[in-house]
Image (cartoon, rainbow, N blue to C red; front, side, top):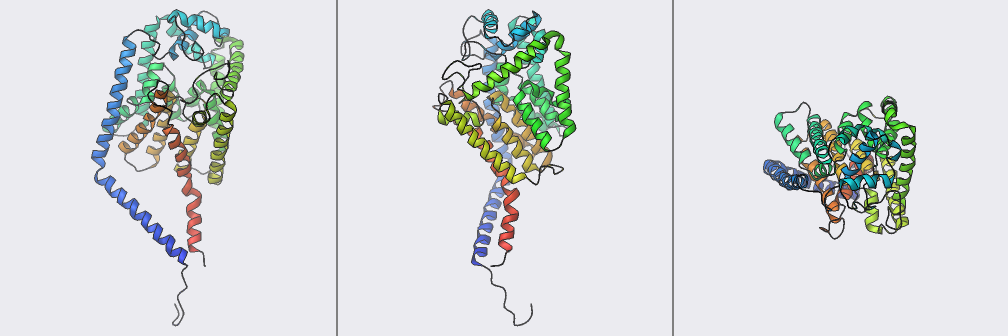
Amino acid sequence: MVAGEREPAVPAEAHESARHGLARLSALATIHDIAMRYRAPLLTTGFLIVGALGVAWWVSLISEFAGPITQSGHHDFFAFYSAGTLIREGQPQSLYDASTLTALERHIWPHATGYAGYMPFLNPPSAAVILSPLASLPFATARLLWLAISIALAIACAVVLTSGRDLRTRGLAVVAVLATFPAYQTFTEGQWSFVMLLGALGALAMALLPLWLKPPLLLFVLVWLLITRHWRIAAGAVGAVIVLTLVTLPWTGFGADVNYIQYLGGVTAAHATGSGAVGSTTWEGALPNMEGLIGLAATFAGQAHPLAVDVLTGVMAAGLLAYFVWATRSRWLARPLPLQVALAALCLGLLLDPHLYAQDCVLIVVLVAVTLSRTRISAPTVLLAGAALMDLSAIDTYWIQGVFVTPLHLLTFVLIAGVIAFLWPVRTRPALRARAAAPA
């Protein structure tokens, strides 16, 4: 500075902003120091809690499989076994016929189940072909075999998740996956969730094929792949679906696929018209104990008010999508995709899923996988956080059994917060720096 010149005046706003910034940094540093000092006991306590909850759910799982079928049990596998039976009996055209499925399920257990009095088959005809060998076994034996396959798939997911890491981390991953509530729901219901998760962890064209079990989810992934210009992966995934459909065609025929497309339209309409709360629909179920935006909207507006649920869901979805587009518009094509954008996109995809029950919350493991591959945060910390997040889904599921007065949707709120928080620094930090540096 030349002698005699005065130092430029610093605006009071800049001083105030700097003080606030230092205060935030000090608070974060204090939290970080405490976390680092007590990290080992905190992690141990956290895994003990997750393990204790897992033991309780596994005791319930063993009790259900060891005892007779009850009204309070889990009945989704009724639909899978019946669909496999229809393929074996050469009746693929009846896969989505309510009366046919009801009759078959009554042979398994002579009582009404589910909201519509039976368990519908929601997957493509090709999935029924895959299930058909199980239908050659007695129901109880087929259910046990499917449980064993599902457990093996869950362990495979944990192994893929921690590929290249030490045995201790891999052991913690197995605990973090198997001991969670979504795993319990998957095992008791006999759902496909770990098949889809293994495909999602593969993140390649052929590996994405299992997402065809849930077409809306595959559609979200394809849209994202197209936006981010992953043309080959998107084309490969679509090609894999076409190949699987053609390979299973001798067992399903074109008619079953046509029926499935029509059935999917009916299920979509059911979600928009109350899902059985104000009249008969193609699919009926409890929307409030779903996770995601539609479950949150149904809790606030009431499932018996479908228009209000639709409007609220649409407003929340539009708001989050608009925020996502605004915050990431210059980063979609970045290679590699910024971690914050990837995590926000995954949170948003789960929120938009129109059929996100607890079992499919195992897909949160994909968030864990992305975080493990892109940060230096310790693997046990990330695994514990993922397990805790998945276990939040238990609250909304147990609501339907009267354990809670209302679904709390803590998981949905955390996912919404994730979309906002992961993207917030992307646009605001540069703007704040520029504002602080601007002359008065």
